[in-house]
Image (cartoon, rainbow, N blue to C red):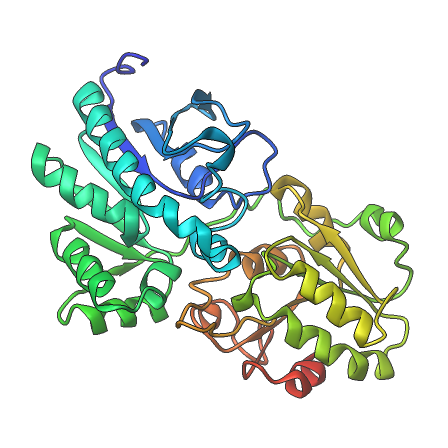
Length: 364
């Protein structure tokens, strides 16, 4: 444990999505925010263990502590995909949830006793926000909770709603990443007034200066459409595939590049074959975030066909739209969750109804 750096205040960040190693494909938004706080704080991050990840390391000036919660080879509840998609893909992982929750709380208590933080920043209401509420009250440490979307739109059963309400009421401050999430927080806790603070992206990375390297790599000579993100239900990629025959009838030289992996990848590949889209739709697999800039820069249009998944989960904000727009892509998205905070339809892109392949094809 490093000593306090130059008398700085101590910030302890709790997150279930955090880079497992350098060059990881996991979304880096918590890391990017946290590393920009190291000039003003001594920043520590508590994140879950994952096979191959270091138990402790310093990353970008951040002290990263990873807590163990089961046999190492099975510690895959949080990592390459979010907790909820992992549970949907394999319900047996529900057996790990109690171990995860108690291990995180135990690790948090130990870390609070060692480092004596001035403030805790919990990302997601459950389980991180709940752990911060319990430990924060016990040790008198104030906490901020940031609501990202899946934690408020999903988990609709009564016990979960009560836990989320408790966290919101106990927090010293609540931030949300979109107006849609702010409205949902106010529905759950009448009178709550969370501050809308969208997650940011590195403007120096997403410049729009394409080199053609991605096009050459995947043999794309004509128009290029791009999707980037997890291949999960709420991303709605199946509707994009359904729209492709109409798009190709108008633009036969177009190819769709899908950058990402997830629990729906196998079914999407099968669907692609059934629609006769082999060779016109290319699955690139998971792409490290630092390489995504080249994908955006070489694309003509970025399509994010997000939907409201079974259970209510949907797009909390949509950082990929921001990254793609900064890179010069035309944006096509669906009018769900926080996407409307980014796309002003007809001006900065096109918004269409969800689960509507015909409207999606017309916009593209």
